[in-house]
Length: 286
Image 1: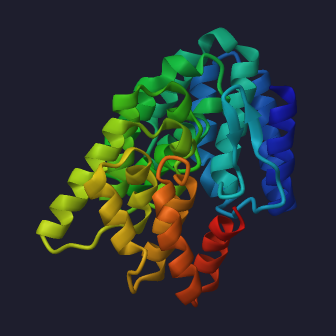
Image 2: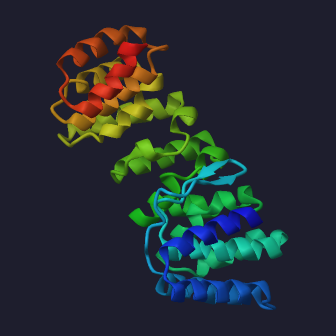
Image 3: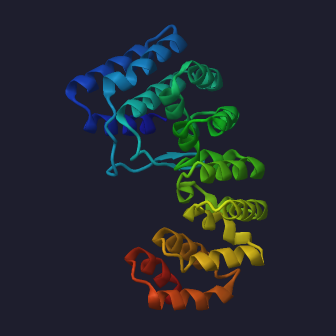
């Protein structure tokens, strides 16, 4: 955990001012020597965003490696990254207190603090015992909290049951998050999730509502004949996002549905959007 903590502090340091970095060093020193760890962590976490700001860490930094997969930090803001750094230091001191410390901080925190904690769940010791916090974030009526667990987070793919994972994917689609950013979707997609997505598309079309383009990534892998027809229809949709995601889903499912290659080849001959052509080219090259 020391290497992970050092990497995170370094990333924060590169986007923060000298004054902000001085505050972070003082906060970490205070926590390292604290005799009231939970109380001091709560106070420092509350101050972190105000003291460290909201600068994105940026793409220059590699993901932090957890036991269940890489945790991307390029989209993290400096204040939230500081919160995770402080938690990591405290858990380095008291690893057996991970569940108690993290849960207490989550319960006391505001929306931004809770979201930061959820983004870092996979980095913490005994991460599997923190699933209730992840599930609570996914059920929230807050895009910030739902995004924090659903997008670019390896925790659900590692610890959720199929039912829990499927519900998270449907919630992300319902609130119009980019489901293509759900970590491990390709590995965790299952027949029930494909069926649920087909039903959702049916509901949206019956209500004359827009279908989220990313849904094809979760619908096609175990699609029925009707589901395959849905995806094939949207390969020629005027919206390039629908063409992009239907093509991407079809290319990834060619082993299961080799009959889709003809439609992909035909679309490639007509396609003008460079991003869609790039995806279609993978099928042409295969």
